[in-house]
Length: 328
Image (tube, rainbow, N blue to C red):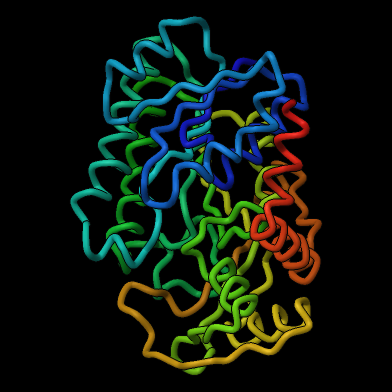
C-alpha cells in the first residue's frame, strides 16, 4: 500500500514508518516539525527511513487544506494513519484553544480532503485519557466516557466522534486506537519515563506526584506499532480499540523498576497531583486480541532497558552517529 502518516516524524510515527517500509509499503510522512520539543530530534528519527527509496517526507500543517491537498493530488493514497496532534495533558490546560485547533480542526480538514480524494481507510490515534476517572477498571471500549479530565482528552474524544461521522457519511473504514501510555526509544522528552531516566542519569531529583499511588498501563512502542500495522490490514467499518499492556503499574513501582534497571538510586521529591491527571489506567485488550491477534510482547523491565540504552546512546552521541553511518 501507499500510506500517509501524519505526525510520522514523532515518537510513535517514526517507529511505524520504519516498520511499514520494512514490510514493503510506500510511506509518505506529513509533519510540521512542531517546536513542542526540539525539531532536530524528529529529523533524527527519520534517518533510517530515508534509506528507503519508497519513503518521502513532506513538511506541512494538517490545518492547512492546501498543503494536504497537494499531497493527495500527487498520487493515489491507499490509507492514512493520523498521528499528528498536540500532545500532553498538562499543557492543554494552559492552551485549550490550540489543542482544539490542531487536534479537532486538523482532523476535520484531513477527513475533508480524504473524502474529496475517495481515500476511505484511516487509523486515528486516540488516547486512554478519554476514559477519565469515572470508568471501572479495566477500561472497555463500550464504557460511557463523558467526563474528560483535560482539554487534550476532550479533543481526542471529539476526534473519535468526528471520525464516526465520516464513517457514517462516506463509508470510511476508521479504526480509532486508544493508546495507553506509550514508552520506549525516541519517547518525547517531556514524558515521565524519559524525564525520570535523564534525571537519574544526571543525579537530579525525580518528582513523584502524590504518594506514588497513581498508576498507568505502560505499553512498549513496538507493541503499539504491531497493533497499528495489524489494524491497517484486518479492520473494516468503524472500530474503537484499546492498545495497551493490560497491566497497571503504580508510579512508585515504576520508579523502583527504573532504579533497578539503571543500578542507580533516585532522589525523590513529592508534589501534589496536577490538575488534569487521571488516577489510574488499565486497558481491556480483549477486542484487540480478537480482531488483531494483538498480544503485547515486551515486559516493562525489558522495555525500560531498551529506552535507557537509547537515552544513554543519545547523550554520548552514539545513537545519532549509528544512524548517520547507516544513512551514509
